Image 1 (cartoon, rainbow, N blue to C red):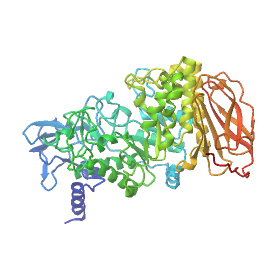
Image 2 (cartoon, one colour):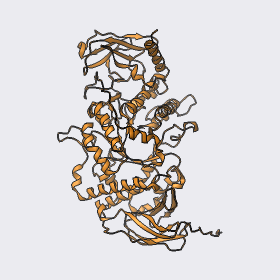
Image 3 (cartoon, one colour):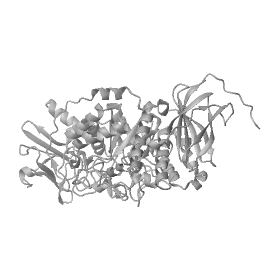
Length: 638
């Protein structure tokens, strides 16, 4: 047996056992000398043909099955670069249907579904400095501020066609850099037939959607991001896939990629089909897809969508089948996610893995050895829901619902969180973030600045959906560009300036991120001021002098001589005020520096006084303080 044949048999066996994490080198289409060889996994098919432009879509190219693996293959010299092809499958019941190549890296433009023979030119990457830095950095002690983007609706050409990645390279990258974000996260970029799904109902797990340009264009985009010190994350959907009959569902006429149990195979809520995450071949397919995107495109991380749907059998609407213990846990999903994270971290330790997950029953982040799924970060859906509910509320009722704003301090260290105001919060009648805010237009912008300050100073990494940075009024529409014309409005322009200022402030202030994996990162000053509806706390850096005082006034009342407890005597300086005129407020100058008063305030020995603007947020920094003073010992009270 030749070395080549031996390697093929080993790759085939690893695919069958769920350990081939480069299955695209086994299946799909590959050049061999002057010929192409096509392979597809369809173990229960009666017959499979390769059909395409090159044989006028007839049955002249039958494929042969490898009985041990259920892989069909054919070698041919007919195809040319760029020609379309599919697999014609006579399924287990005798039905004949055209199916896509699950491993294709390029498809024709919608609404067509044929794969294209496509060779991606070998790229000589120039982002080695960026990638080297990421390997040396501890992400948990670094700023992480994500701009979430839907690639085809960020900006469009005058005729309504979407920007390609060549266009986005010229416009999106300078914009993100100017705005001060550290990363871009794209909603799914893989091939999908329906724009209305936003990319979350995939067909081509190895293919960049032709809607967004070519693989080379995306490679060049990522490289340019890295050269500008911007990281790239991509959403990925391993839980479920598009239900279209000519794609993955029941590929050979039997459950192939999906569960055998129809209650588990069908996702009623989203109208999709669920992967059988316990099937070894499916594990090979999905983990290969994740590694392909990391290595082919040098992306810096993956956000795994809909993790809850992979963990709980009763997460979906409709009937569900209990597990072998009689419970609702999807053990296959749990162990697949652990395996996914273990494989990726072994191959690429610097990769950032994120989970969109809404429950609290399963440990999502942390070490797999300690029983978690092994993700680096989890979206904090509870924080997002509570905060938006609070800021939408009439201020008259906030004092009775203050816990919505403070409850997160109780559990903020349970996971490594990302605080996300994502696309899900600005669609389906939920209104845009700006439109959610209570009050007239002026107060809505004041609230938005206040809320963003709370997000940026609360422990946790950050994510904001595109358009929210300048206070877009209308909901996001997947088929229309953002309301860039609104930037002619002074309020929107000033809101954009505020967001940029806040982003850059966050990135430059170690107190907001260098101790974020420890409870030492925050100290509450007063979370019980219900009558005034004011929240105050301290964010801390590594040294005693490196801290920031955050004060949020959640009432439309300006408060004079407002008392704030501080840890050390000296002078304190206001460095950010959300109600400054340059941000859209009415204040023309900052509060004067405040001198401490030697008078206790809760657990603090000293206090300062300042003016709190109506619906405003202040950030105050120590200017000249004495950190050597001894804390007073107070007598216990009965």
